[in-house]
Image (cartoon, rainbow, N blue to C red; front, top):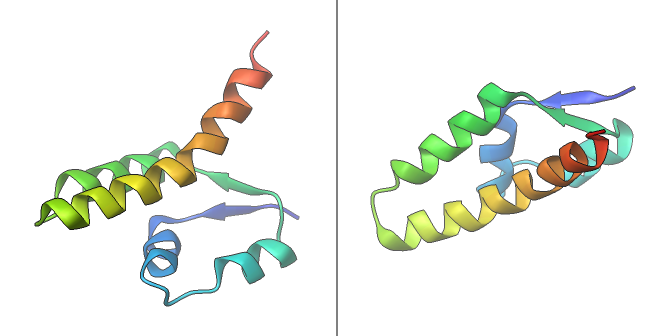
Length: 76
């Protein structure tokens, strides 16, 4: 069975407070709602320091890159 990842789970994973790899081992493949992607991107924009913004941006890119790649491969 698949699972839809919420931004709260992804933020907890980024902060090292949640074992996302274990969850995905038990519930693959994951999906991501457009709203969750938007929330993550807003978090990048709202970062209060350049260092935090850079760290968040890298994290979000790593999350969204596979989603974008899957989308491109599914186009006719």
